[in-house]
Length: 179
Image (cartoon, rainbow, N blue to C red; front, side, top):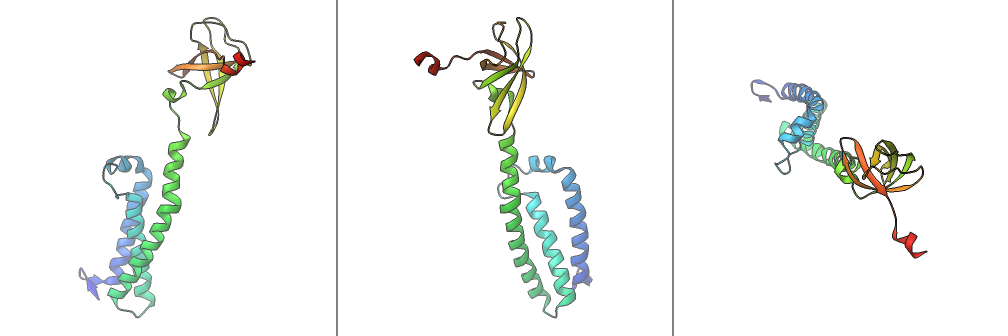
């Protein structure tokens, strides 16, 4: 069968090569493309590119190695592509996107958390604290909120965070007052 003046398996092969090259470019500039397509629902360039790539590869192989009609080969290639692309989307892309969001933290999100001093904080100086989160331990430069000294191993409450430094006060929990 001829399509665009060429054999159908040649069209599949050229589509595979072109979309493969576009996929490589997408790997390098994916953050830009994700931002462009962010507002459009159900449009994910990674899913679209993988669908076209798998469809063209399946169509090429079916045309080369089977005696089925070109229309039937295209339908089979599309069904296989939908299945594989769905598996890629739900078992690889969705977990990766949710993991990326959960691993990040901002300085604003540190406010109100409790940490422990690992390097004493002198008057008008800097020390260091650690904050235990679900993602691990974060170490930050710290100074007293009211320029007060804070000793080693004290628990501190983070009041605010600016420019990589957290401003802290000694933490006095309600449990300490009950005892």
